Amino acid sequence: MIAITSPRATLVAGAVASVTVAVSVTLAGPIPGVILPDGPLGLWRAADTGRPAWSVLAIVAITGLSLAFVRLYLLARDGVVDVRWVARTAAAWTAPVLLAQPILSLDAYSYVAQGQLLNVGIDPYLTGPIVFGAGPLLDPVAPVWRMTPAPYGPLSLRLLGWSADVTDAEPVPFVLLLRVLAIVAVLIATIAAVRLARPDARAATVALVAANPIVVLHLVGGVHLDVLVGALAPVVLLAVRRRWWSLAALAAAIAFALKLPGLVLVGYVLWARFRQPDRRLAGTARVLAVTVAVTLVAAAAVPDGWGWIAALDTPGKVDALYTVPAALAAVVYAGTALTTDFGALLDGSRLVCAAAGAVLIGWLLVRGGHPSAPVRRAGALVGAALVVLALAAPVIHAWYLAWALALLAACAGLAGQRGLIALSVALCFTALPDPLTRWHHGLLPLTLVLLVVALLVTFRWLSSVHAPSPRHHDVTSAML
Image (cartoon, rainbow, N blue to C red; front, side):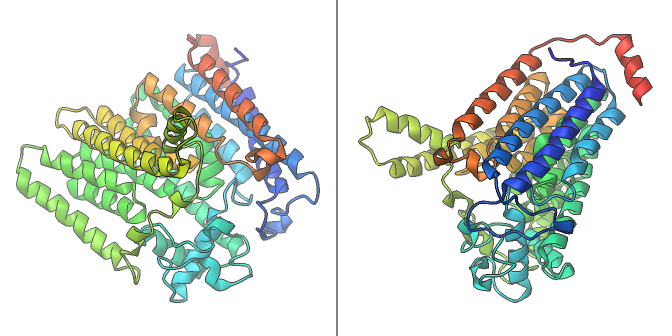
């Protein structure tokens, strides 16, 4: 293995990779048809030439950060570094993206426009940013989302409206404000995950959450609302563990009012309370009452509080070939000797995956809510249910892993943590600068090669067994 017992080298390598990603993604520029703001001190301007080269540098750096993350996890798992060292490393890796443009996604600009739609009295659940016309609100939004309604819950929309109001709908301060909220959410998720984790696994848990490239690049760097659901998930589990049922119902209902995955948490809390023998019906009714009350209050926070239900199909309007439904449709399509319409197969595959996913999620929640299930086993099962929801969906993005990240980091065993790491690394290759994802640029083969290399190295490192020596602890203590 490559110097896997060098904490300082791991910290520096990840920090260099993070800086390189932030710079190269910025210089690689956005997709065609998008005009981004210059950003603070002009730091968000794309390069005039050489954008494919900057894209190549970006994916090399993403690969480097992903492998540095694996190394950091191994150092923490084997007791070479402690929680403080891992936290400092995560901070060093996150710092380079704090003033960068939204990394590898334009969703933050959709957030600005949707928040401003709400503020000017236009229903974001019925129309898209296109109503603003060409200008600073529409130009940075991805063309595919300019005419689509918002698929987020009423609390998300209210948060976006408040943020747009505070920042006068200026994209740069808006992005920086949401980034601060994302950092707070990551801190909450990390602290809650540490409280759930075994004492000897806390350093590894911090590595899996705070230093995860999904968190660094997408939740903080990319500024996605999914981080809020991810922060509430371990809070729900902790509340259930302590039998604080009203708090658990409150947190779960808030998560649902933010984004649909919160419904999994609502189902878990209701079932866990129902399975408790003491005052079963009365207790469950109280939890249900809190859930309904929070949901109704959230729906009243915006003029069309239930409009988001009809807009939930918005993300699925983009066809992504790396999803589970698309892969299943492709297998069937290849087996039918190209005589079947692929679009029809894809629609059928999505229905099958949705139905199978619903059944599997229900089974996981039933097991997780059993009174005899230890808290970490329950957390692993609920986290798995959230992963199933992401995988069964018509489209999956890297930041969807946020829903389950803290739960799985704290509660999964070594095998589960390895799966979480592999999924984190793989999903890092699903959001890249445009030239890396199109055949006509000639760079897609490079993306696939680096993905395979990253996964092979990851599995090789994770399969290793390393016994820390006292010397390793002494070196780490000296560095601290």
